[in-house]
Length: 159
Image 1 (spheres, rainbow, N blue to C red):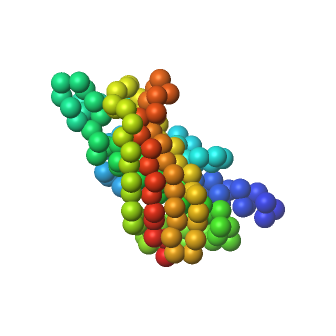
Image 2: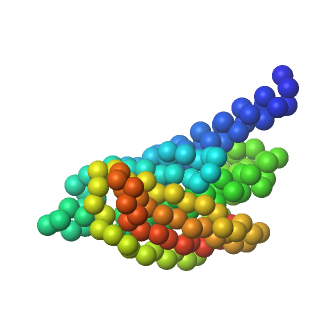
Image 3: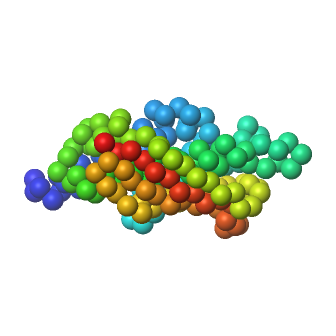
């Protein structure tokens, strides 16, 4: 067995472990229905479907602002995790997931641009800077018609 194939298998294991962690072990994400649509290449994508439990304004059926903030934060955290995994290529999946235990949001800014109307939503996030102690991400949320609902900027402690 070549080290290249083992490396690819280990990478697939890491992607699987991160997906399981974010979609199922973090039960808040599972309750909100967040699913990972893309971890790489490019921006991380997290999607979810509109449901009655996520409505923040009962007259108009708009998505609750807390759900918008949460999905942007989750997407930012995922982007940081993938950035950490690309930086620490010699570490195992378990070691990368151990690094997740130290990951925490320091600051999150959300600009609500449009009403959260739609059947399906997608959050995208990219790391702007990954330092030894702090990472910075930019995020955006769109609906199924590609309307930009919100943008966000987050800072995360990584050590």
